[in-house]
Length: 328
Picture 1 (cartoon, rainbow, N blue to C red):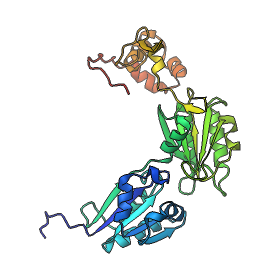
Picture 2: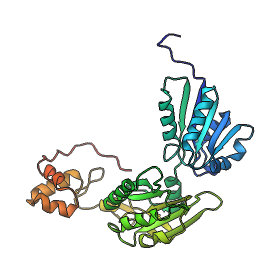
Picture 3: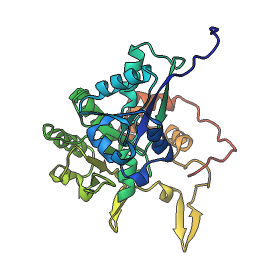
Picture 4: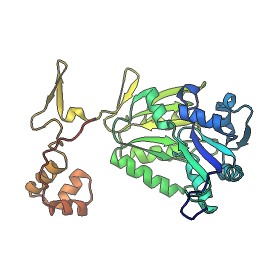
């Protein structure tokens, strides 16, 4: 074979995201990948979710903390020319098996040009599925943080919690509590209460779309009292999130620009459809530059670093472009 030729792929690792676990929410490609596989590898609970789809195949079940072992087994089988489905709940790339697998592959000298093909097959992650069950809490900016300190030092997790609480993100907490890890959710609550109102809405979703599904709405000050475990995802709203008629909703921000009357959408005074808010970047820059106030005063008002404010004050306000922006 010439050096320029691509080697024939003899084995394959398919990193399959199962979504929440019910067959109704399994993608067609995920189902096809499992059917295509010679070997299926996964955490025993995840194997159980697709037990009827893996009959007649080599099935390798691993325990909770054996992620690297799963990846090593997948590489071993693929090196022998097997097609391997390495399964994760949710999405394989979100706290799933994609990361550990690539670490093992790279350590073994694998490259995309090697004779083992790798395919990542996405699935709905817990934050998507749990959000769908409780309403529309992720309609504005959000992030996900795992409270598991098995592999991440607690100070790192705590800094991230404090930063996102301060920044007013909607937050999905993964791995919030286990039989041994009971204090992490309490510390997360403590950090959030430094920056958020005690009545901030919180949704607790356990085993979403599975037979033992349980949903509970509560508030930030009572969050740690809820029934929370390893199969739970905790959704903490931002300062605008609300619960109405049993649904948790985070507004996208249309009320900042539009007044809806009698079913008609009208822009508020000073606003234009398809253009940045009057308090968007350019408008805000012009406003603070015209204020004559010090960087220190402005930094305190907007809760932004003083050196950032000083840099903005020294930056010419950009000209407003003619092209309209797209609004979702």
